[in-house]
Structure formats: C-alpha cells, structure tokens
Length: 508
Image 1 (cartoon, rainbow, N blue to C red):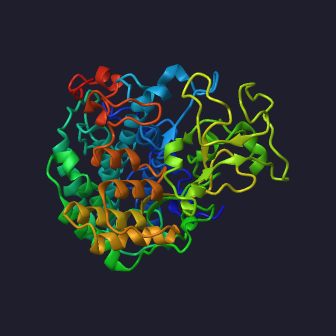
Image 2 (image 1 turned 30 degrees about the vertical axis):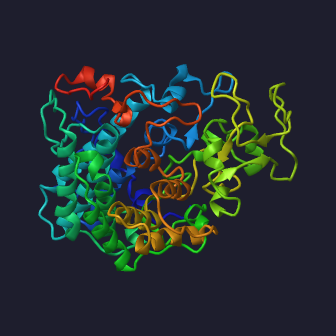
Image 3 (image 1 turned 120 degrees about the vertical axis):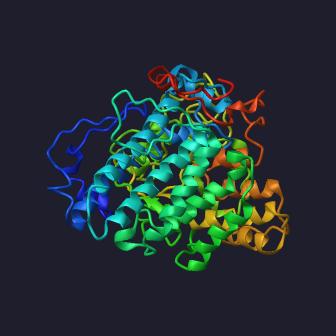
C-alpha cells in the first residue's frame, strides 16, 4: 500500500499502551504496559507513534453506523430502502430518513461514543505530554488539541449541548454535566485560536493527514459558517477572513479533474486541506462500496467480499444534476456488467421489477419499505473502486476540501448581500470545472443546490440543510417535520442512564 501517513508506520506496539473508553461518562482507561514519559516519549519518532494512536480514532469517520447516517441518511441526498429482509433493522434506517428517531437509536449512541473515544484518547495523550519537558512538545500538544477540537465540532453540530471534558486524570465516578451549545462553540473557537500559531504551515509529505495551521483555519471556517445556528449570532465576516487565509496561502487549488479528489490514489490532491488516509489493509474504515453496491456488483470490480445492496441517492437529487455535469458520475445508473463485460443478472429479482433479472440501476425507487426493488436507486460511485478491493477502500477521505472553502466564502458574501461579484465568481469556478454553465446571480436555492452537487456524501448535507432552513422540509419518502427539535440529536439513552448529570435536549 502507498500511504505515507504516520498511522500505518508508527502504531505497532503503541496500541497496547492504554485501553479505549466506551463512554464519555466513564473516562478511565486501564493501563496495560509500563510505558511512561520517563522511558518512552524522548524522540520525534516516539511522539509520532503516540500521535498515531490519536489519529487512529478517525477510523470510523465514514462508518455506516456512525456519523455518515446521521449526516447523510437524514437528508435529501441518501436513503437506505428496505429490500425484503435486507436493511430493515427494526425500521431504524427509515426512522433516520423520516426524522422519526428517538434517544434509543443505536447509531446515535455509536456516534456519541465514537467521538468521545477520540476525545478521551486526545485527553490522555495531552496529560502524558504535559509531564514532558521537551523542546518540540508544544507543537505536539497543539496538534492533539486541534484534533480534539475537530471531534468536539462534530458533537457541537450533531448534539448541541454536550459535556466538555478536557482532563484525563479524573475520578472513576466522574459524571460531567452537559454544557450549553453556545459555550461548546466558544470552547472550540478558543481552542482553535489558541493553538493555530503553534502548528506547522507545511502541507503534504510527512504533514499529510495531520492537523496543521490550515486544518484549523478550515475548522474555524466551518464553525463560523454555522455560528448563527450554534449561537444565534452570525459570523460571516469571520468566515470570510479564515477562508481568505487558506485561499491567499496559495498552497491549495482546485484540481483540474474533479475525480482526482476521489480516485484510489488521491493522496496528492491539491484540494485536500485535511484528509483521512484510509488504507484497505493498514487503516480500514471506508466502506461506501460495500454499503451501496448490489450484491452482484462484486463481479464488476472483482471484490473480495459481497456488497450489501443498501445506500443510494434519491431520484430528485440525482435529477438535480444537468446531463453535462461531470458530477453526475457520482452515481451508478443503468445496465450493470461484470469486469469481463457480461451483463449482470440477479436471480433474486422481484417478479414485479420491469427490468427483470438483468441488473439495471434506476434513479427511481419504487418505495422505501418493505418491498423496494433490489435494483432500485442510483448507487454511490463517487469514490473510485479499484479491481480486487477488499472490505475497505484505499481512497483517502477529505474532511476539509478547497472547493468547500470557496463555497463557504461565497456563501458568507451572499449572506452579507452579495449576489454577484466575487461570490458569484467563486461559485462559478466550481461550476466551470463541472462543465456546466455559470450562474448569472446567486440565490439561496442555487447556492444550496450547488453545495449538494459538489460535496455529495462528504458529510456536509445535514448541516447545510439546517443552515439554509430546509432540513425540516418534505422530500421523497419524508413528510415535513412538525417540529424543528430534530435539528439536533438526542443525548443517547445509555449515556443518560450512566450519567445523571446530563440534561436531555428539548423535544426528546
């Protein structure tokens, strides 16, 4: 494999250092070795090895049981139809799409636990690093605080009111209360501003996939873009300022080919500000191909495992792309073939399927449940699938991408009253690469639609819909929400049961 990131090469042995917590209300970790600051953290390689464990917590960033369904299946971009007995799971996938979840949803709890696992690992390493007197220690500490801020930003966005825990050395019965959303926002902002100048401005090479100065600027841009939702006060000027830091650095640029960002060997993309360097062998967790493709698609890509025939896009979202839009290739539609060019056939195809056994992916989905056709739905094909791919993709996943920075700045300018000028120019850069005609002026609708087309399935859609006031609208297989309390998720039941100091979010 081709990854250069520190995770693959430095984690051997360090995983034995400490166990991983399972809940924010149980922040203790059991010690399994005698590795201490006195006998280990002495060289850059040893520091990098410890940092690798913190970055390892990014493994499930796009796992289909964690943030991905909360940020995408709840939107007008992605749906998971029930095909007979497949993808029923007690109706939980339907509940996510219809905004009918409650505090017992397992994916809500998985996401909460996952994010706090990352925070706890950062807190523990920060505690250990604080005991060390080394010349370069402040840079490593800043990097860990930046990664922790990234986890907290997801909690802020998804759950709103959450405990802010920054210490590792706490009593076994530690039960932190929820912190109001606006104060979680203030914490993330303060952390980012405090550490930004301690971080490297170098990009690529050994710095690839690590939190650096520009990662923090992108994090702040995302924070400020949504400030009105998080705190009630918009921060458009701040959004523009941090976007300009990234743009004016001239360290990033749009790739000539949109799909250079999503190919199997995409680690050299000029757009990646912060990416997770997934690897099919050494750093697993990226499974879009398995959760979306038809069972028989195994023969198309010579996959070593059979796909699950689940995630697909909605017909209206698919048709929101002009035929000339290169991003329409984010979806797999039409007749499907094996790698040898033979027509794929599904012997289990429903008798009611007008396409019969020959497999044809159709943008239209006949129903959400219980008898969605096995071939129905345009499948996710945005990330390249190499022949012989195993359970996980080798493609890297961009958390912060330069195209998003351009769109964030354009939106902030638009919110301040600019419908043409620089705001329009920035959006039309994106459209030009996509081979579609430029807009003549920006509107809220065409700006939101453009973000959807450009950033499909990159875990931005729910946040965007909320910011544009569209998350509670009706769309395919979903009625309009009777209440906007669903704009943040409930604190999961296991967390409420374990910590009496938590306060449940309104409406749950």
